[in-house]
Length: 95
Image (cartoon, rainbow, N blue to C red; front, top):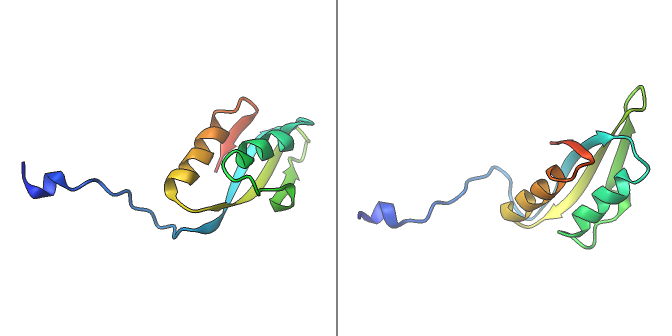
């Protein structure tokens, strides 16, 4: 095995950590949507609060879009937040 094969793979990212990172979460409008998204993010960043959320409804009111600015210190932490959000049944899209 060459020395090159022994070097661990490094995930490259254009994001410099730590940073405040906006995540857009979209789902059907529901009274508990913001509460659920906040709970998920607080599982990864306990200091997160609803003052860091911008909310928009669709023109017909069927969907809600939340832009949540989260403080992340690493790519794995950001990836974990994305995985948690995308696996929630109320969430349709995470950008």
